[in-house]
Length: 249
Image 1 (cartoon, rainbow, N blue to C red):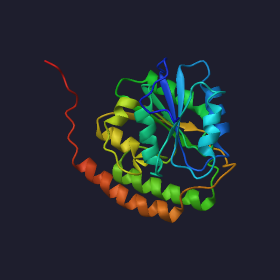
Image 2: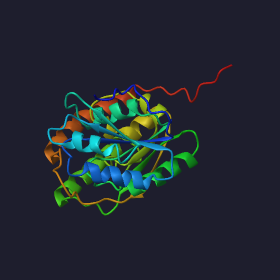
Image 3: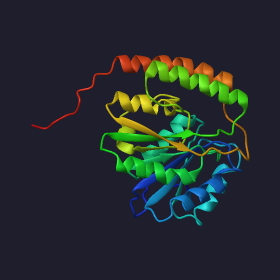
Image 4: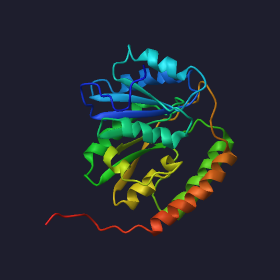
């Protein structure tokens, strides 16, 4: 029987590593093992969210729970996209600090603990530390499209992020749940965190070749979605009013 999101193992973790996956049977098990190795010695859980995969992703991860006791597997009944899978994972997570990374294995889990350490070493207002991919292992066309998209977004939103598309991020769960939800929100987390009055920071991270599976996005599809999303975030920024903090008197 599938475990409900509401059911909780006895020990509460400090860190929840949330990984959205869709048709990643080839990458997901090895990635789960890498995450467990990277966070060994810390109080953590791993939350994979299967976005209604059509292959054996869910079964492969479920079989791995006996090997990795920190692993939990949540499953969407219908395919709902990466942002919804991340949100489902954060809602189901029990840690106060969330680490996200893509399920295709291109993000290096070994970089995750350093992002957590940078987040925890910062002031309470620091809510997100994002990765910036160096030496990206993507096609030339994808890198050019990403460079243009990041440049336009950064100029219009002034979010200071050079690589908001990097899936590897560490952030405070409470801060994330304050943000307005919409599809593709995961690409605008720095701007939305700043809109709420939080600080953000960025650190260089490794990037790897995809070993299995195929990308779920095309350059044209990503561009089309980003145009309407960008307009929406600009509108949200224009309607924001920040009180600068709240004091009980």
